Image 1 (cartoon, rainbow, N blue to C red):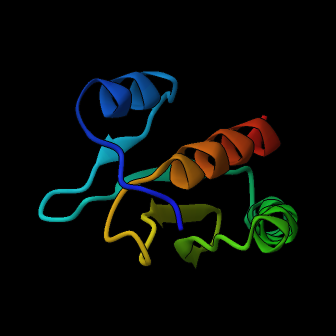
Image 2 (image 1 turned 30 degrees about the horizontal axis):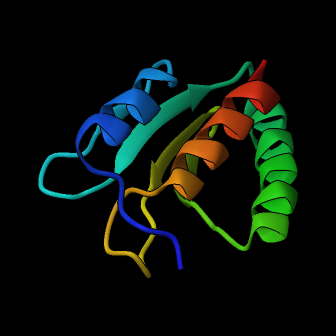
Image 3 (image 1 turned 180 degrees about the vertical axis):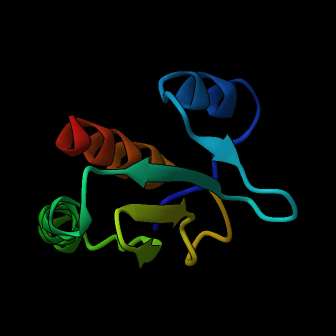
Length: 96
């Protein structure tokens, strides 16, 4: 099981991400991805779904038209772990 990030390790991990923010009241991070249209947003979600399945780590997300709001937290660990950081980085790369 992944372990929760804390202290300097957590700060360093969060420093690797651009545009992600900590969620108030939760040990999680979130980001809004905005695409040109629904097809681009859904296509990105499909690519991310395949990556997430291989990682066995699945995002919380909400899609409306061209916007996808993502929240990442490792439920088994009760908060933010390196799995969340890795998935966030992969999501960012796929969104480019």
